[in-house]
Image (cartoon, rainbow, N blue to C red):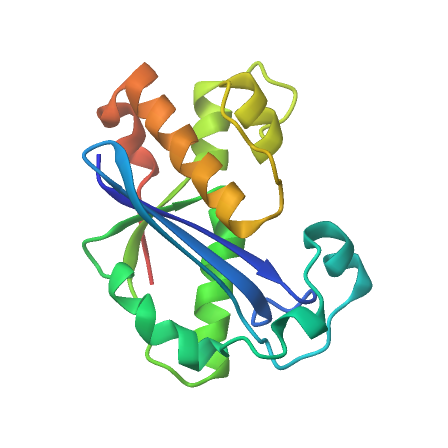
Length: 178
């Protein structure tokens, strides 16, 4: 299985306020690369968000902005590329809203949400949060709400589901993101 796992943290409730990005590259069912960066969202941070992920305005003061970071990762978001995230509607909206905010070209890619796959494949669990799924599948998640740790966990969840249920069981969950 080949795909990219993504995760973003935001400075506030606004989706176009990404303050960190992580991408984990999986080729032939193996993690082969990863990318992590803080992002200067050029907006104020809400204390609730900082409490969750630990990133403050001071920490991103010298970080690249979205338009400076995007050229380094945009090739991962192509019409033929499979991208996954845990609660993908959030992460996909961060990409979409950030591109809109900076008037950058929209992207289209194949998207699969491991929250949705987990709900379908493991219906008896009380919830399907990232930490719950990681615990259930014996996936290490040491620093929850760190974008890189979360992206690695998401990648491992999808790989585990593909091993347990087969890739054809996952195919109905793949949607073209526009």
